[in-house]
Image (cartoon, rainbow, N blue to C red):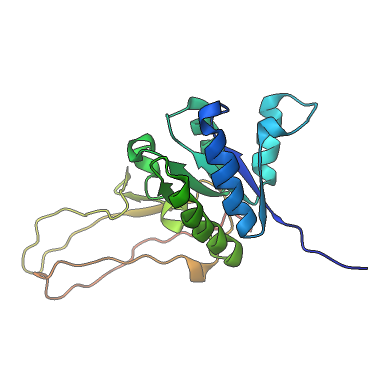
Length: 217
């Protein structure tokens, strides 16, 4: 008996309108098929439960999610947020960069400008990487929330202060794992870049607590 590996399931989140049919049928489904995955939209499925329960079910089940943010559809935004909360692998696509909220712009995304011919190869590269690197597909700088002195930081936060000769400067770093996904210590690192005007620096660690794992251990 032949044994086959199940294909990667890619759930497509996008508005269900005719203007997106070519993007889905000719672009997204083609890219998925080219990397050995299969794509589905919710409106193609037959189910008995409520639509919201089906959405939750399919997002949880999907191996990868592609979300078309074009037009800033509120349902797409909601479902994408739910997928991120579950720690799913999400690829954002859009015709216009402005349709991706600022807080999501450092997630993997593709700006295809309505050109299906450019969408297909870009999607193939993203999908191929996710499929071939299953252990490294969580973007840690987005998964982990960093707080400096109790305030949320940006992607590359700046700790401001006045530096003088042999001056002590105190700050507090907090790391939060809101998705509760298990993290291996080798995969999580952080560093501090020091201005060139600072000749020497010494660190003293007063308190440390490990609360990143989210594994119940």
